[in-house]
Every structure is written in C-alpha cells, then in structure tokens.
Image 1 (cartoon, rainbow, N blue to C red):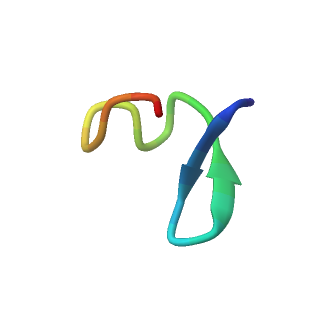
Image 2: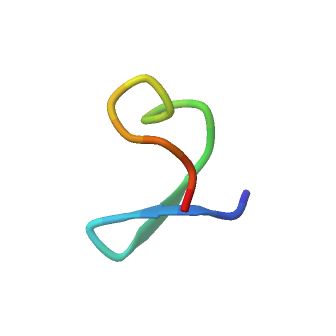
Length: 21
C-alpha cells in the first residue's frame, strides 16, 4: 500500500477517510 496516515502505512482501510497521497 502507498497510502500513509499518521505515519502508518494503510490501504483501503482509511481510504474512505482520506484520499491517497
């Protein structure tokens, strides 16, 4: 996964909350 949230690499888990960077 290429998405990162709060320094943690996540996938479609937080995709609904924030768009991929």
